Image (tube, rainbow, N blue to C red):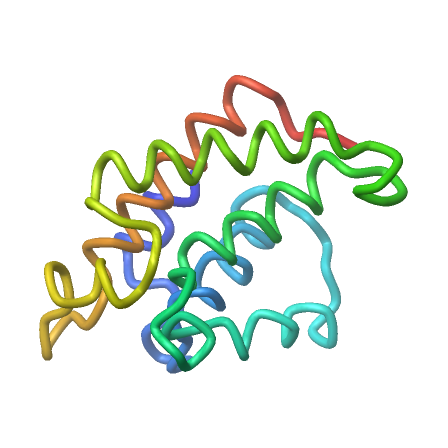
Length: 137
């Protein structure tokens, strides 16, 4: 689903960052029906929020999981969404060695493809979770 879409080049022509590729791509792949205004929320999360903190692939994936599996809010429904986000983060860190951009980018960034390799890793993990959990709300 998402992995295949991204591997075909989704987001390249739009100049999307890693977090945007995860959210915009998932919006299309999983039919989230998020409006353009909502998609802009991912913009500030690329490059570890510009500070090398949590990788945009991770923050984007958590936005997707929240969209899919929270009906009202995380405080009331926190157990499931926290578990799913933790599952994603743990799998991502196990695969890449970190969940922070400052730990991931030096290993995966390439000038021509930028962070595509790490985005594909995240998309594959997210696809597995979504396949198991269904399309949620």
